[in-house]
Length: 99
Image (tube, one colour):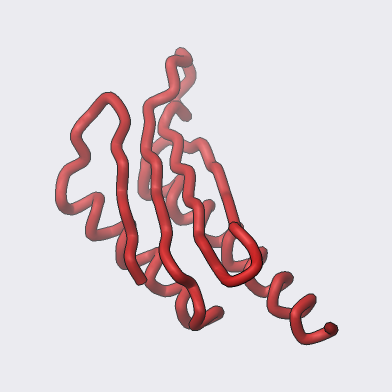
């Protein structure tokens, strides 16, 4: 799967990009027809500790899946977003089987 990682207003280090690639690639276990994905990393301008935002968009045939999570670290936000996408993929596949 082709994955693009965009870090907005900062430069993400290679370790973080590799972590994100690894996590998102695991989603192919649940759906083998994922066309591509985009990840947007940004820092929220709030005073709270949880100012790291990860948004993940996946293109699958017939639908675009999207998840946005805000946490203390990009790794935690990515984990949560990937988990949300895993649930969406499962739901999408169940709907496809029903038809």
